[in-house]
Image (tube, rainbow, N blue to C red; front, side):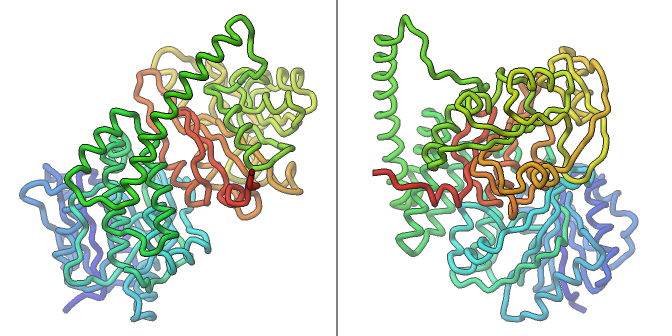
Length: 534
């Protein structure tokens, strides 16, 4: 008998994760299913992990004779499926509740005219700890219904594990892609006249920070990532002029982050491929901009050396990489004559401060620092600011441990980070202190009850993503964020936290600038509503 739904689990090593995923399936209230596990591992560890379900006929296990890689392993699982209703569950993801599958299938049964549905999802650490809830805004759902091609500018559907769809003849995941393979598949499935359903309930848990994930390797290969986006755009070009203008802007920003050598590599990769006019325009504009910028920089340098070689400029930056100067310019661009700020992880009143420049200009805000010793310096140097000696959490009001490191800028509330720094050899845990922790939305409600701060600086050593995930953007929408998006290590193994960029994009914040250490985000509403300067 054909099962009601086929659950496809493409697996590669990590037997404990596979077992967690499969266990969540067999625990479902809806039992009319089959589980197709295609194993791309070079050992039998996944097969052994499936031993508890070996005798259940609903489990279909296949070991690939040669490794297929992702996403061909996804296609292999789908080819073995007997139902036309396909539910993917990647091997490190799992159902969030025992009635999740029933909910997925129920939506498809009640709406026979739709071929695709997706739900909200819990983005979690490997061990299941919640980071944030991925749930697209109503405006994004409306955009998907009317302008589906814009999904390639920001994937607000989320991971394949959050989707269910009806199998259609000829549908396959594109084996040439890694970074945008899910977006390309969604654009295939929903088409130019989408009929889909969004399920607001969080039905699945998605592993978001796994070092094993394919997207991690692609993040380190910007050329491959950009080339895939260009290929995707050429295949799913917007039909209207407005969408194509957005396409030029998106592709320009995408390529602008690349260094000259990488830009040349992208051009070489795309030479023999179909290329959209928008891609050619973006490339030409960037080349022209690069040439002009080089000339301007040279001219400015000459003028500066001529005028100020013996004088000190009166415009000083106090940030790590000039972020305060960028934010100052952005605030001017947004028409903000007065700036309120919230500095979470303030540390020092002036050194490496993203807000002291604004304090000197007469603006005022709230400084949050869990280290009582450091708060004394903040009070003394910045008496007009409100200084709060507490830690910021995702919710509630409690007490927790703060790990004071040799280098105070590395103080952290995360024990694992503190121990990793100490193990590296150059840092030591000098003290462990109890500190009050208050939820971010409680902080905002108490100190910004009349509206959100204009500018938020966030640097809390490993907990930034969790705080942003808990942030009530519906009530508090700052114009600008500056967030540390680079992990700190002492062995040059740092990585860029792209999940923060993805989260902010899902909350409708665009990247305005990136100094590699920090990323500056601007609210889409503030950006679109900025004054028009003659």
